[in-house]
Length: 295
Image (cartoon, rainbow, N blue to C red; front, side):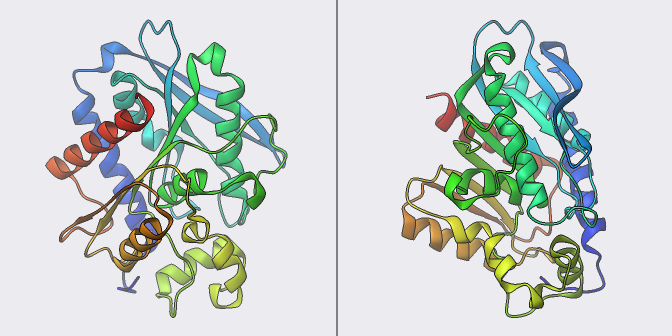
């Protein structure tokens, strides 16, 4: 993480907008095949109603795998609608796709965001019959902060905590496949850029240097263990926010724990990419989910 003159939040939102635009291009011929339901409440936590939007293949009459799409925004911005075009693309590809909201910083700190996305997965499993979801096969996909949360859905076990009482405690919140676009994997750093320090200060309620235990507890790499689900992780080699070192760290951890998947470096890319490269990586993501969730 470097280039202090760039703000974390602006770049995260810019990348989210790019995904919506690029996915819209991909979706141009598919809209007629998808039903879309918005503003479905999935929990009320600390007095705040959390909602999701649901994209499904039109005429769906049997259970299919689900994909949870999680927006970015540095934990403090963004909205679930940023991922709606991508959800429609996934639904046209044969999935039930949910875009979800979660509580934002600085009002809500770690681990609120993790608790919320776990709650959303439990909701989908609890309502799997009516939503035509195969509760055994749920994947998660996100951008930046949303990618980080997707990884936590795949890596955290019940014993690791962070479930909270958000409803449907009898259901598992662990997903069976993960796709991450430029998600950070390790918050324990020898030093922090100004932008990185600012976003983590909002996340923890204090400077990360003063919250090294929370940095460790909140880092996906802490939880990589044998038996975790396959993960496809994309990183840019010139990302000013999530240094390419994150890619090497998670690849080493996955190798050691024998977690299947792929870590892909987009040479020359920053915190996101557009156009043909976005189309390629979205298609690769759906193919990856097909291999894991539709087998």
